[in-house]
Length: 338
Ligand SMILES: Cc1cc2nc3c(=O)[nH]c(=O)nc-3n(C[C@H](O)[C@H](O)[C@H](O)COP(=O)(O)OP(=O)(O)OC[C@H]3O[C@@H](n4cnc5c(N)ncnc54)[C@H](O)[C@@H]3O)c2cc1C
Image (cartoon, rainbow, N blue to C red; front, side, top):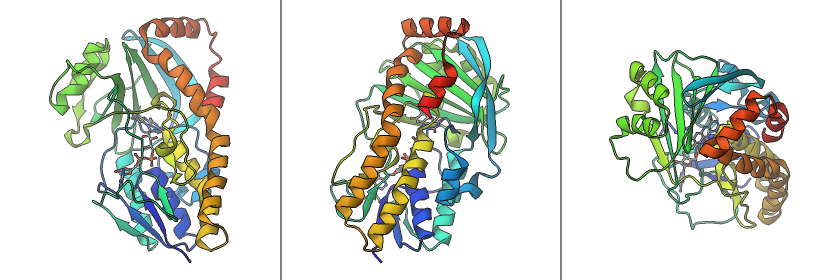
């Protein structure tokens, strides 16, 4: 049996690792960071099915996760509309989820090497790149905090600001995740702890900033990420990529985590066949890429087209008016985006 090396211990890498180990495939997983740790993420998982979770053998880890059923839209600091989510979304922090999955990976006998960065140029058969988003130009900035004493007006709040949007939703351990995506403004400088507030104010989301002021923020959870790239599906014939490595979906969809898990599920059988010596690596990559293209291309392209509507002030106005007049085919769009 051939050994598989997975680069990246996020949801894509860990879930693939667990499902391969459960099929008796030996796996080494190289992760640059450590567990547990916070990641910039809205931490609401929309679109993933119980079938995918069961197929990967990870459903158990989300058994106690919260379910988000309602959403409230805020525009210019005012509550604009409340509605039900077409399907409930899963709410769980990456701090908990990634750590649980890393624990199971170890328990199953996987070789998990943390604090180790794998060289990007070291490619070859049996290597799976689940190393997260590709670095883009520093146009976007993602910020996240966990807090307590932050009453919510629905399960999931979505706030539109100038060249920014933010979300708030409950996660485990009685906390609320507040996460935002902002067009970077080099003129805004500050300590990590202060940066979120400064950006919220600068982007006309003052009521959210004030609510954060009144909340109790977990200082360890304050996280930031820059250089986010939303280029379309990017697949290579000589490198097997999963999760954000194939192309990052804009975060408003809450579908990035699902794509990470779905792509791992797509890869499991072909990678197992390669490890068993039944298929060569080139054909394995081709088979997986074909399935990934079929599953995600429309989702990624459509979300990239909608993305500017959420952050550009002019487009936001049109979006909000259409939403108020109930002209937005919310359910249909949701189905295509998940
Ligand atoms: C602001 C923002 C909000 C978001 N909100 C949501 C949301 O609400 N819902 C949702 O579903 N998605 C959301 N996402 C997207 C979601 O976080 C990602 O799609 C998801 O984390 C992808 O998982 P992954 O396993 O592909 O990558 P990651 O979780 O990024 O894991 C990749 C791992 O690889 C490691 N790594 C990288 N390079 C190397 C190397 N050379 N060697 C070893 N290790 C390496 C990294 O340390 C990292 O741990 C959001 C993203 C942003 C930026």
